[in-house]
Length: 468
Ligand SMILES: [Zn+2]
View: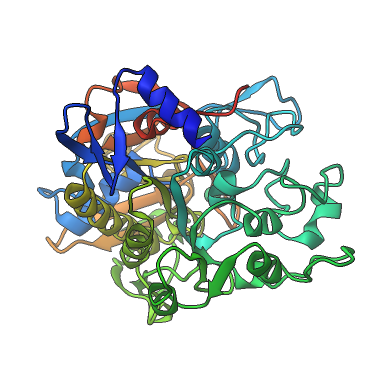
């Protein structure tokens, strides 16, 4: 495969030699390092969340670090219904949208790097890069078997098949053996990736039953396949270079970095008295985060281990924006967007020093949160002009749940979650932002399809991919 890749480069008329991490042109001039690609996925990050976070973190006249990247486009989201895999759906889950980015194919809701029918596997960016001789990594602050990281590492027809004991219930038809067999955690343990940093020692401690002569836990399978498995970032950083390594930093998902003060979710607003009496919250450090590495630290550790003469691909997920947004915890989600922004800065500074690294920052789907007026212009209008015919207070107050933050400028930033009345708020299906560094210049128009992110990475890394 490596030879194939080099043939492809030669066929492109580039006549390149790769030596000591530098791509040297035929005339002997040093052009750039072996290509690198870093794909950042802010899970649940849409332009509503970006605007909320920008106002809170940088002020109404400020910008986030990622706002200074050179290229901005929008990705239209595509997916199919799970029960009717030829019929489009319009609001993705993380499994289907991460599959679009990881494989370049549109699949059905809940599918992890398999086709919409749930039958055959689709080669992922990690697998393609590894097959072409590049070094590869996945960093996330969720558990590694969660849908987004899973779509780069494993293939199952249902995202709930994270561990061996879930297979019989959710993936009864899926093979239990072979390179694409077994649960997500088992496939991750057998994957060709070099570097994994995330949560999940609970899933990695799961037993792999009924396999005579084989390792008993997922962690043991990983060790047998040549991974060193450690439980801290310090231990990971201390490993000798070149070792394939997994850092499991939490039992499940890592904790979010920020919480609200007071510590609460957005509030229901049953009537206008409650609406006018709504109190502001402010964002503070989450005590449960203490001692947890930041996403920026995890990203730096992965990049240092991956960079080298072979070139590399790294996917970094800020995975808790979505989870905090489901729970309607505004400060929790803003803290995770801050984590993403810091990690993007680490990677872009790294890219500037090492050259030829494409940086893409995007999202898998939108979330429920909306930046809304407080006080509402419309409610005031109705109260003022429709005195005789106005509805009662309960019908006038906002649906969903509302949180009000006091910004550093003394402003009142109102965030409403109006998709449902369930304990967890819902995803939304609007196009999501795509930001790129200078290596993305001229490569996309104002609107792209989410699956095209796969092509951008493949082209930049000059990968030969599996035939359809
Ligand atoms: Zn979600």
